[in-house]
Amino acid sequence: MHSSLLVSYRGASVMIDCGLDWLGKFERLHPDAIVLTHAHPDHAWGLKKGALCPVYASQKTWRGLEHCKIEDRQLIKERVPNKICGITFEAFAVEHSILAPAVGYRVSAGRASDERKLTAKLRAMATEPGLEARIAYDGMDLILR
Ligand SMILES: [Zn+2]
Image (cartoon, rainbow, N blue to C red; front, side, top):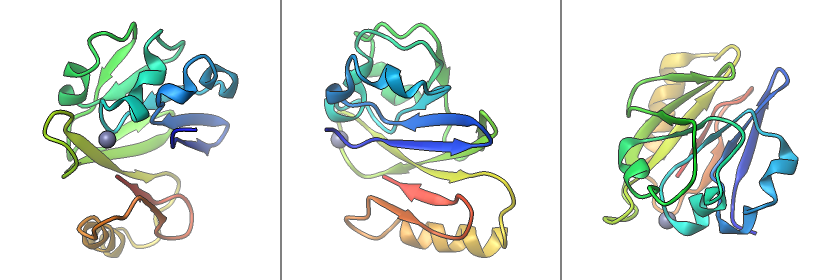
């Protein structure tokens, strides 16, 4: 099964990435929103037939998903916190593919213990090669790419 992550906070669930293996299956998770990192098949093509919830992605990712029948397309701008279902997603560019530019997300909700320290730690982690997902602090702060 293609990698995906379901983030829940106070009864709302946001799915991060939805690869082709999820086509016809992700609906049973009833996500309130879907957030995409990039337009590669193993991260986004599970949405080829659309979704019943809003889908969030960067402009570069949307360019690669014109063939998907997604009706509610929401734009995520890099380095701007986006509150989705009470969960904050902040996108930042990562090196992955020239054809399908990718973003990682800083995901947070609730109280962040030491915001400044946490941000510095996450920025440092974002440069580590091969990092895919790591819980950073207590609560719900993590980094993905
Ligand atoms: Zn990829």
